[in-house]
Amino acid sequence: MKKFIGPISILVIILIAGVFWWRYYFVFAEGVKAGNLNYFEKKGFIFKTWEGRLVQDGFQSPNPGALQSNEFRFSADGDSLASVLERAGGKFVELRYKEYLNPIPWRGASEYVVTEIIKVGDSRADSFPIK
Image (cartoon, rainbow, N blue to C red):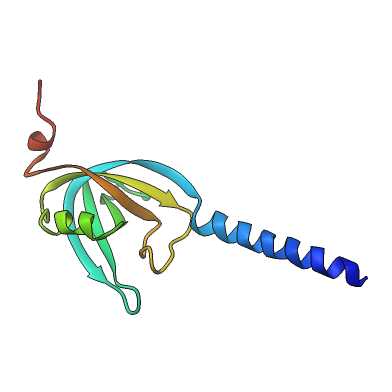
């Protein structure tokens, strides 16, 4: 019986590490979102992370007949992105993001983490020139 304790405990540790990686570090989706940057701020009790909200064009609603704006809440990956987004409040921005299954406090409060700023403009027309 004692010879099985070592291999079983190693297997359990590997299984726990795999589940932790799957829940917190597996990239579920990647994409691009565009809209007007509503706010961007650094907040948190212990881990100060950059959090923002993008308001997208159009409306959606879970209830028929009701209107609700499309909001994209996100965390930013690093101070270099934050320095650009701090000056882009109210402007039209296009952001590349990664979606994780669960947030981690030191990565941000959202499952969506912005990894790149593609464009910043005063309006949608500035960001996407018509050819």
